[in-house]
Amino acid sequence: MASEDLIEKRPGEARHPEKAHRPDQPTALRKPDWIRVKAPGSPEWAATNSIVKQHKLVTVCEEAGCPNVGECWAKKHATFMIMGDTCTRACAFCNVRTGLPRALDADEPRRVADAVARLGLSHVVVTSVDRDDLADGGAWHFAQVIAAIRAASPGTTIEILTPDFLRKPGALEVVVEAKPDVFNHNLETVASKYLSVRPGARYFHSIRLLQRAKELDSTLFTKSGIMVGLGEERHEVLQLMDDLRSAEVDFMTIGQYLQPTKKHHAVARFVTPEEFASYAEIGRAKGFLLMSASPLTRSSHHAGEDFARLKAKRLATPLRTPGSLARSG
Image (cartoon, rainbow, N blue to C red; front, side, top):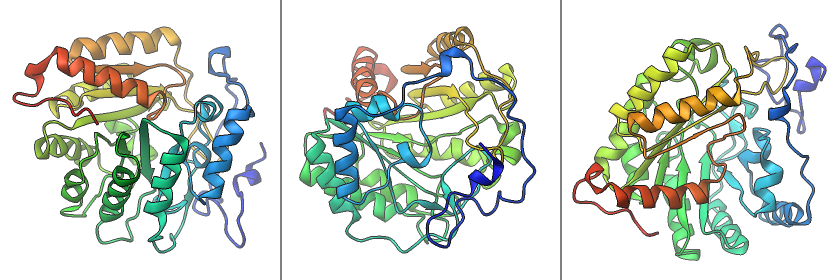
């Protein structure tokens, strides 16, 4: 891919204007066989694509260039990205468009809920761009989407993957009060890499956000994930696990970072499947109810199956959340 291919345009806009003048990053590492996936195109994938387009919805599957889109959409699993396709931040790893977002679409909650019902989803994942331009970071919009899904598809369990709501007091409380089944907020990388990988965020704020979500609702499942291959050290990943456990996070995901374009952060190395298996074993020993660690692991990959496993694990270890039972959805 030529570096100028980074500038994928919609009318009058560059996809990554803040990255356009950065020097190209190395892309010499060849993807190993274990990181390769089939291109999407099955009839089931086409059906999901049609429903998404008919409802004028945005998915992180497309915007972030997820390698699992073919597999997930073939199963009618899509992760909806609300509040537009333009993020107010410019993380070095992310392929989502950066810029000044448009106004919120008041009809979006209804359209998301209708798509969930039409797809017949038993479990849905809803994420968003960062909306630092909004007073509440988009918390009320998240709550409206959750309420609309509950009304249109009461049997569907809901997982949300939120921004960090940095400097948005009261935002988290609004989201948790809407009663999602899973609250996910990704750390993305180890603390030492935040300045170069996630400069608009704060590591310990994100840890506290996850901890506070569990304090607000002890029955809530909490979840977080990181990418590896960004230059982190193994001991830093293990420390991050400890930080998440200190915040009582239930579920951790670890996947391989893949460089979207030459203007994004370089891949330092491809972590082997054996190393991922080791991380998963260590995470279970540290007390996570569930660990998912593999080269192609992503936050919402197999989310429905994972939610069922989370509920079963909690029921088998009730002392983790005294006096509470997992919701049945």
